[in-house]
Image 1 (cartoon, rainbow, N blue to C red):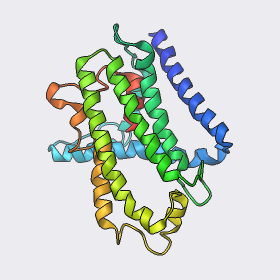
Image 2: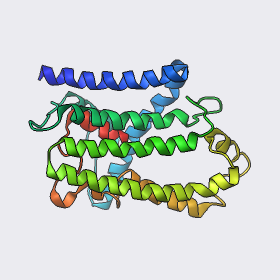
Image 3: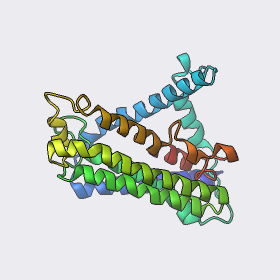
Image 4: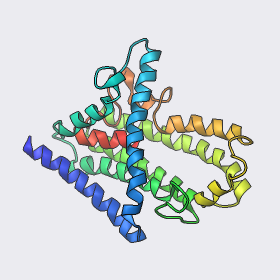
Length: 256
């Protein structure tokens, strides 16, 4: 048990080394950026609770309602439970790729925030090709999913990874098409400039068809209902991450 606890510590250590190494290369003031990022993590927990409440209402059940008032502390209880659970590695798996694939996917998902302005002047890297960088980094996450399915040495995990990769790649085309009208209106890939172009009029009002297309494609990219086919519920497995537990599963879950 102690060995697996050390393994989880090594996973987080590798992730923070990669992330802070990226910050050092960009010459970023980390103390300036961390305060806006902490509420983002809290929002992820609350959105998870909100989604589970909605799914519970759809399925005519209450959903989380035990931990805290109206179940508001349930995401934090789940996080503590998963962190302290035992990390299980399949005996015939490729151990290095099995461990590194969730770290890769989670790191790439965090890198996507590096070019998103949280406020005026508060952005990790205000590059001119920010939108292109965002699409490039998000596309690389498919490799981590494929590697996780193959390294698990499990046919269901491998088939689930292929299904997830096919869905991600196909709906990235739809997201790209939905973004094109915005690029035509602004003539820039810089996300800060795109935000400033909306000082007088938000783009979602005249470009509502693009917003609808983007929303549907975003649901598919994040495996949300009704585009949760990669989870392979008919086979009673979780898809590409069926062999993952504890911290490694948390990394996959947060990256979505």
